[in-house]
Image (cartoon, rainbow, N blue to C red):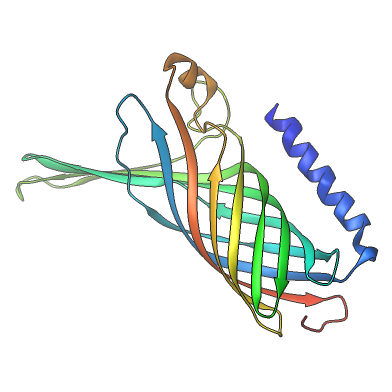
Length: 226
């Protein structure tokens, strides 16, 4: 089902390229800071902390009208979370930082310095790391650290599902030279845990979200700013 959704988004992306003759087309690059976390719903919510990570990639904007456009592209999106647990004997720290290849499709409204966009996305996990640290309270015992790669799939050896869907909203300032400074908030709709795990714990759900501060530079096909 998730594969079919991703294929549908890819088909929509190809359609947008075919429609590019209908209006101004701008290509660009986008990079930013992601402040990621996970919304983990259980009978008692677990507290998780924000994980600073990143997003970077290429984007394309296809004009539909003077102030209306469609924006899409391919972005590497860092997501995840971290948490710390302490007691009298030790401090335990854990972080999970999956990286997704994400394709958004956003409806854009811009003009007079205002930039606003909203729309869904589809994402596929491509890499990631998890890290665990155990720091004893006593200085006589050394700290231990373990790192491992995250596995994407739906088997018992996997950590996260391969595909994720969600939506985002983006607001900010756009200069006349095609520079965008924006704040973005995105939230996932898909339970990120493999189905064998979610089936065993009915009523629980884990979904990604991230707040981002981004800089984007767009140029039109003639090499000029907006």
